[in-house]
Image 1 (cartoon, rainbow, N blue to C red):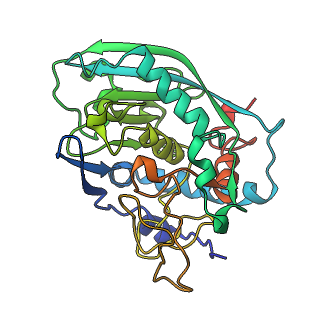
Image 2: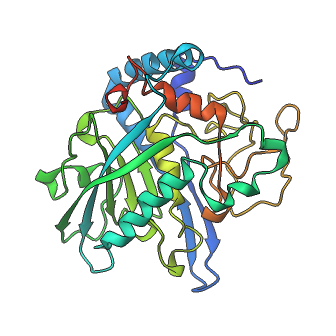
Length: 316
C-alpha cells in the first residue's frame, strides 16, 4: 500500500513543472505525433501567480483523504452537464456537432466501464478496475470564429475579452474548450481549487472525440478522459516524480510516464518491482493503450462531489 502524506512542501514538489511530451510515429502519415498534457505546467504557473491556491488545494486534499474513507454521495449518482466552446480559424477546427457528441459518448463509456476494451484489463488488475459511474450530458455548444493560429496554455481561450469564450456556469457545468493549443500539447485541465473564471478542460481540436486517422495514435477521445480525470482531482499515475505518488493506494508505483502501448507485463523498478498499470487513463500511453480507472481513483473522484467537496454543486 502506498503512503499518502501531503505536507505543504510535498505539495509544491508534487506539482512541480514537468516535460509532458513524447513522440510516436503516425503509420498513416509518417508524421510525428506528441502526447502533451500541460495540466501540471499550468498548475505550476497558477501556484506562482496566486499564493492562496496552494492553501486551497491543501484543504481540498485533506478533505479528499477524509471523504475517501467516510464520505458518501446522497444517492451515488453524478451527472455532469457539459458545455463545449469551439474556437476556430479553419473549417477543420470548427468541429462538427457529431464529433462533439462522439466525445461525450467516449466520456460516458470510459467513466462507466462501457468501453469495449475494458475487457482487456489484465487479471492482475481486474479486482480494482472499476465503473466510476459518472454520466456526462451535453448541454450546449458555443462557437466563435477567430484569427488566432494557436492559443497556448495561458487560458486566453477562456476569456471573451481576449478573443475566447468565457465559461458557462462553471460552478455547475463542465466547460470544455476545443481549439488549437499548439506546442505539441493535446490538452490540459484545471484541478479543483482554481479560479472559476478559468475552470474546465481544454482539448486540441485535432484530438477531440473520435477524430481522423491523421490524429492517430490519439484519435479515440482518450485525451479528454485523461484531462477530465485531472479536473476531477486525479494525478498522473507516476505522481510526476520518479516512483512518485498519485495519492491513490491501489495503483502501482511507476518509474515515470509510459508511452505507446507497452507490452504486458511492464515491470517498475520502484520498491517491490510491481507490474505497472500502463492501461490506466492517467498514464501517457496511446489512446488504444488506456482503458481503465481503479476503485481508489473512483473514491478520489467521488470525494470532490460529496457535501463539502470542491465540486459538490454537481452532486444530485
